Length: 119
Image (tube, rainbow, N blue to C red):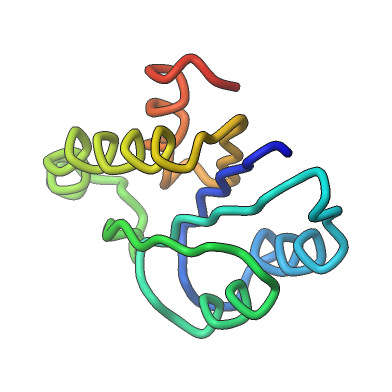
């Protein structure tokens, strides 16, 4: 069985990525894949993910505004090392085989995957 870690930029319903993940989880072959999801906050999407059998973790990150100015980027990046460490802990404890990130707001997952040497 392959453990797949999905990185989402919100815990609420709304965008195409969230709807895509709901459809994917509904039809994912559970004999071959185990879905694990990281969200930045609890919201309307998280109970749906759990009902579909995904294990859900919350790692807080502020993604409610565009990071266009320097102040927003500095604030966002301040906690970057801690978020990556938290993701690495999940990668190791859940024996993750693949990290899927669908938003540039959560590139923390890509960094953690690179450190862990998994796709």
